Length: 204
Image (tube, rainbow, N blue to C red; front, side, top):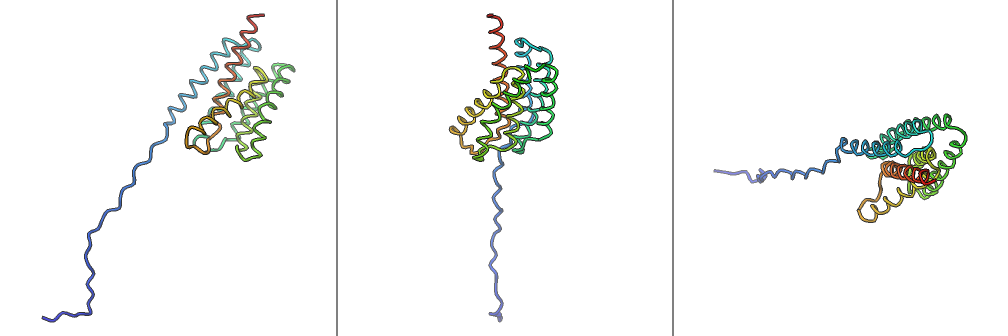
């Protein structure tokens, strides 16, 4: 029997299935983050309600509204690394309304609080260490903090820088969404300021 030597024979090889990539870890549940933010707002609301000494209802409701709006902005920042301008705008409107209804002394405190929060983080913006959304959010939080005390905004930026610095040094994260850290620092700073003011009022 003759075999044509010009016919090429392709060796049959076993097909090996491509390796299945390992599943990536799922991100933290949105519900858990929202519950954490709700808990933070509840703590802030309770402290302000118990400790505020001036414009009790107006200041408390205003700060709760700002905390809710910027809490949502922080949640979006976690997902997209962008802070929505419309949430910042509505928060600023709430602060302006509360300020207008509270008198000229509060206006001075709000203006000073805005400057003390805005200027330090704006300087960092020049080094491209933060985004413009972070700077605007810090300014709004500084204005809201001025409803309690002008130094709340500065304390917010300081606490944010301290906590993110520690996280950056102890983890592998090179870039963090700063919105949640600003928001959390504001909850702590505003609550502590309300407690201190209440203690001072009680002692006098």
